[in-house]
Amino acid sequence: MGRRDHANTSHQILQRHPAALRRYNKSTTSDWAWEFLRRNQRFQSNARTDRLELSGEVAGETQQVRLARRNRLAETWGLLTFPDINLPASRTNVFWTDRAYPGKIALIGRERATDEPDGLFDLAIQQCEVTHLTDGAGQAHLLLRGGGCVLQVRYRDLSFLSGATATKFDVSLSTGQRPGAEARARAQARRLLGEARTPVWTRRHVLLRDALVALEAHESGLCYRQTAMIFYSEARVSEAWNSGSTAMKAEMARRLAKGRHLRDGGYFELLSSGRARRPPFVSHSPCQAY
Image (tube, rainbow, N blue to C red; front, side, top):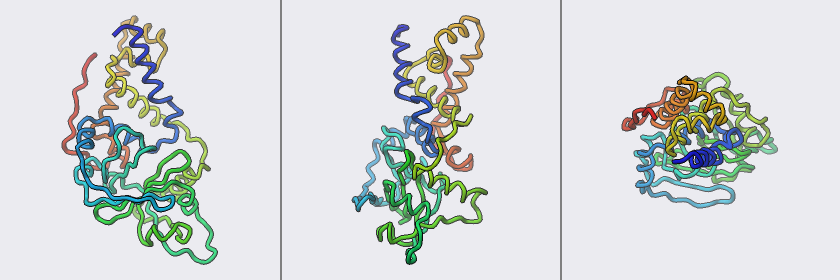
């Protein structure tokens, strides 16, 4: 591959991937987890060969989906069923299991009292695009799309089919949840309604983005130097390589190693702060010096 081809490939990755801060500025931990998981080759193979039967219909603004049975293969990866691996979470239905993603908000549906005002989640469900999934055990899950983001919640009690305007949606907060759970639930509802401020990029977000870019660069056949040119100017990369220092090369290696770790099971840590089980059959590719 010549210098011009290298530059073109780097440019394509930048255009395809993080139109950097703009593309992932509303990403949640579940979005990040999906981006890494869908790049795992064994996961891709499982998803392509899966033939689990789904049934579904569209009722008003809500898409209803029902699993014919438990998808144990998908559950091994932390999912209730296999989404379209070619699409980001914003465009496909990524339903995580409760075991993999224990921090999901739980909503309870009940009959609305006369003249009872709407809460944040009442408004969110009325205004968002909703996908309702009933899993193989009969448990209901909702995906809410609005405000440029996607939120998965558990759901129980009054049938969701009874109509959103006739149903009051309360957030279930158990004593076992982490401190600040109620405030986080309200913040997520405001994001769905488009009322939240533009999220601030934290150091963690930058580390995840850089790991994802390094992983995609490697999968596109770029070496460490070509990967570095995605993050830095050509002049700075040339200076670093010609100086004899290995610092920038080591930095690219660390980013790639982080991306591989998250792709090959580490994404569970994003969903559950390191407490969830990793898939038993995930293989880890040795880091190559290139």
